[in-house]
Image (tube, rainbow, N blue to C red; front, side):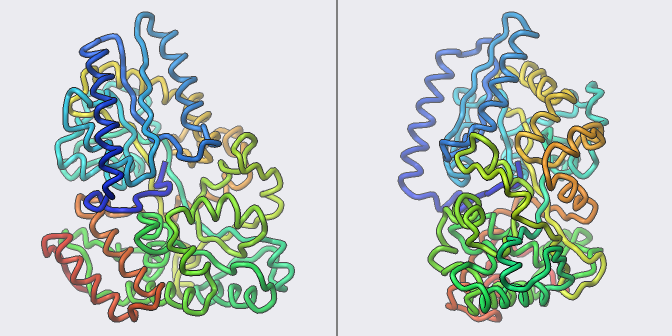
Length: 464
């Protein structure tokens, strides 16, 4: 759903093997389309399948919805078309599929990170005629609705949840380091002080992880950098994009301060080894190895982590809620509102070239009954975007940490996910990587970002 872990590469830099896989996927999907053709009784649904063979959350959920849908709609069939690929390749394959009626599914799973790019490219159809007649649309919170609303004012997707981000910390490591079990840092310096204390008193563990660099992709930009950047102001304006002038912000002191934090973490060796930090699989390493095995003191990460620790996940960790603590990421100096979070999410969208759009929206409505939405949020460790579900006691008590992360929605921010954002994100990742490896000073990396920003946005840049 959020971003969950997102693009490791921009679409223009997918390696040759990615295009080979893309061609094979397109051929396979073309075969599927030609076999079902214009079959008005079959709805084809494409989604991202986890590359971790032990995780089947989405597969299991959709299998259940498929069964319910076919029972409630006699004569109609659901064809699930999973794409098993890393996020970056998923985006590329999906975009390729959307270009032709022969390969376009009827329903696709879109990351809000890239939805505006696909809208601008004409790959998705507005859902407003359907939403106007759907009573459940009124249950969705306004910020979630806005995530799939384009600059033309039309809505192109139905969100299936959101996410928030904060600090996970190992209580056992904190105890060894003499740090409090109820740790709640108030400033960036508090976070760095705790990491330095862990490094000094608990050798053999990584004090602090913050995602960084191009190999990690959007997770570096969103879960790492923007969690810092959005804590550098007073929370009343966007430090990346000026909505008044509709321009992207360059020469920002907050940008330099956020880069400085990243540089400090890696130059003081408070984070993972640089080679590990720049491993494209670092998110899996953090969730599946470092945290469960007591090898990481503090992780700046997302609300969805517990889904990897549930029974049957392959990384079962039944005691995680006893061994880990949660704290909000503080603002830079403790200024109002005192804490910061970034939210993303995924939506279900109908391609412009879908053969059965009406049937696709009927499937969306089946997924988004109150009961099915609650089931998905709980299974996926997601944050509810439906008011009726968020007020349901069974949701609030389903899993430790849900209330903590749901409460962060009140102080969260959303990325300016306009068409230029993916390129802006890549520029952020490059700046982060420069200070992480030590190849660039903060000033040089920030200057490089400012130049890349001009190219990425067609020189739609302003300064503050």
